[in-house]
Image (tube, rainbow, N blue to C red; front, top):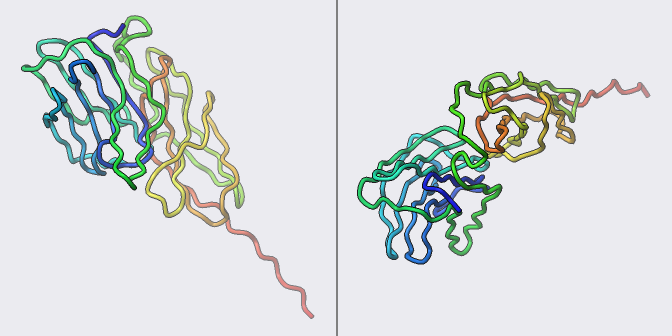
Length: 242
């Protein structure tokens, strides 16, 4: 049974029209709130009602990439407060004072035109505070800006960071990598510690990394800053004289 205060979030595997999440879905009467990413700088809040879509609010200042997490929160009643978050940070809001959808459940929303190959991953949703009393965030995660990446030879790098804490506790860290020539980050591993070794890399190549911290509730909370490193080039010894 879901309360009025709901959330729904997914990781976007690629960016494209109608890729997102929904809240307070009432399938019998075809009504719910939606948050979608249409393009790198195009994200929107919608209301679905009786077979029609109503554009509530649009944003264009954020640049979305594959691997980002889109989250929709719906809270309150008369009015309903909608919040769209990117990687745990609010980027778009809307206050619904007219429709006031009640009840329903969270879910995902994806429309896949032929050839678009849209995909999402790691969906989670439920009641805000469903693991007990929702504690106020009196201490924000301390990930941002403290990631250090060091090359260890031609094919391995080591990542390290300061432990992140908040008042509900940190559960684990997810390491993501952006390969040379790529515009998106992919997950390469997780750890509960404050360091990670990434192996099997190409020699003399530049890689970028970021770390996502999850809190004790299992929710994605905060990304670190991005840190880049170049692996060593292979050493070519002198040729023997003939």
